[in-house]
Amino acid sequence: MTDTRSLLGPLGIWGLISDIPAAELRPTVAHVAELGYSTLWVGEGAGRDPFAQLAAVADVTGSMALGTSIVNIFGRDAMSSRMGAMTLAELTGGRFALGLGVSHVHLVQKLRGHAYEKPLTRMREYLEAYGQLPYRGPVVEGPDGEPAQPPVLIAALGPKMLELAATATDGTLPFFVSAERIAQMRGVLDAAAPAERPRPIIATALAAVVGEEEAARTAARAWMRPYARAENYQRSLVAQGFGPEDWEPPYSDELVDSLVAWGSAEQVRQRIAEFHAAGAEHVAILPLSAGDEGEMATVEALAPTP
Image (cartoon, rainbow, N blue to C red):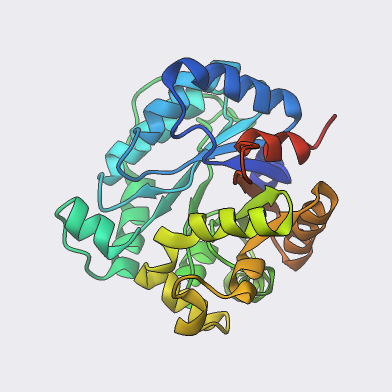
């Protein structure tokens, strides 16, 4: 069985390569790997296919793991996800983690044309199907001589989805949450986890920008715009103690400062440590750009190794 915590490591990068030109993909990923980040995550929206994108850079990642955060289960069947996951596990020598999620109404119904119905039930059924489906391609052999299975994590915000993560997967991939919410999630996961299963992990994304207050908060507010209007995230924000007065533009400073780590490199590292202390085994930096510095300035400033 794959040790998910060791595979993902403590500090990763989320989403950095999704919009850069194809010619820059491999050099950028190789540089991130050299900086010492432990995992590279890509999401799925209306851009590049996540599996194809990760396959394109798999051979320049060194020891860095790769993951999807997340694949939309309404957009592909369980067999498609299984084939993609097993293929990337083979290409990386077992350094792949599959992140799944139910996404949002506007992305499922309006963009893809699917019915966004009973997301918890759909996720439960999807995980059951995924675990039972055959795979007949080349595989990476695990320590027990059996085909190694990539870890599966699901995006979870509410208690029912968190309980499913604890009982049926290797953990969860929360997004748009505060450190205080991570601590609450840790409690739900630990209470629901069966004794015979490994402790479910929390691998959270954390938007971060190294820069002065005005530029950093401006970057944070620009990044928050598409997420703050999504119904799923608004319900999550209510559970975190926020209301419409916080998530309606231009967004309250309290909300910005809870969801985005900003300041000097040392101040951002301290915020990362707060998320780890709250119960997140893995924190994936979602780098923002302050002014003309560019996202890579934040990536380099927060690198685990010189």
